[in-house]
Length: 617
Image 1 (tube, rainbow, N blue to C red):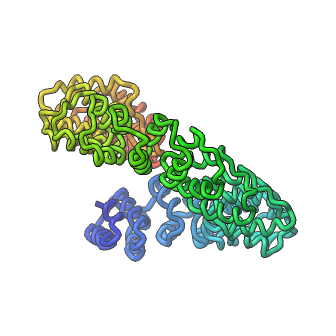
Image 2: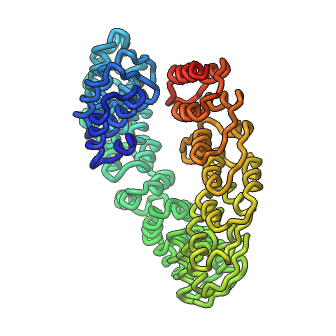
């Protein structure tokens, strides 16, 4: 309830206040949870002070609270809590960086209470400037820096990297420096890479007529990649008599600029005209880039450089850009590399269908089995074919290829009037897609459960492909499969993510009971990183699933050691409450000190184990 209240923007403050006044006495853990929730909910400052007044003496700097405070030092709530805990902080680089990211008031508090322990060396200054979110915090450190800590090029480089307040900090540093510092190529290069603050920093340097400011080809390319026209105008004007080299690499950089690419190319064309180094090679590279940028750039280039040869590789690269393809097909319509073009169209979810429509309208393509099979998984492309040829040919390969898209599958079912054979191969093909559940739901709805084959192999395959939602859909429909065999197969496959195994167990426990061994627990790590840098906690998920569904866990010394070493404090506590007759040994105490989780208070975990040992004695 506490966590839910914290995330409730409208009513969270009222709920948290009710939780505070309702309880005459809260335990230390409940107090900390409420405190963390109030720090996250920025509208709870008044209630936070009530909590601090009532329970402030009990608050300890646990790893969980430390993590919240470090991420919220730009809020008044976190600073209010720190006033009571600042002397408990271990002043390492992690904490100093957190304070550097916070408000000036947080750094003021630290310097006031622990200033004698802090030496503002150049290393500390550089770290703080690189991550600072409040320029006045930087001012505090500048005023407290150690003798001999000068503002040199390394300090300026740190400011150049700051994407939040870099411009203000750079201005402050240039005003504060003891002597002129030449702004060399490296500093300008880093500024040019800073898409958020770079423009204002360049303006600052130009206003100060900073010595040593030279625009190289590399700097200009970097600016063209990250900024708009105003930045390039400033650099061109600053170059003066220097013949600024605008190369093919410059144009490649512009092609990668999603927001400003077209405007920048127009600017350079107005500046240099047809002397710009535009070639067929460049156009191919542009067409192969981000579709959002490439479609306008390709058209712009083709309109102004009509003599660029229309090669096979250019047609293949541009075949997902409608306007560009229209111009190219006006210049060449025979001997097209159709197969390669269609494969590229099939892979383009949003843009290829319009070009396919153009090819059909110009009668440069005919609808046959190969074409339908190739584009079957592309909803837009298949819709183009269905609109023009509602009786398009359907093969077994078409059925498999269409399984990756619910929209495409709907078109095929309409075309066949639901008279289709769904094989295990079709279902497997759907499971290879991220949104396989939508295809399976469609098939179950349109055709009924009896038309969708659900086998033990498919249950296992849904787990192997990380499709837990599809596993649940299958289990709702089948009641006569040997789930024990599925359970064993999942645990025997080392390629399945540990987190997926744990989530699959949670689903399977709803339909059957299984034995859990210590060897299974060994398979599940404390923390696991999936794609996209998502951290999950497989062992915690699995233990909670067992508890929820009353599945017995092994309570041997080895099993308990694994749980203590890898699980969260809350999970260990829940386990010990459920298995209160477990004997806590020295091995378990040692395991607690090895627990790798950053959010766990090892002292509290050891204390929990000692308390459990005392209770069972």
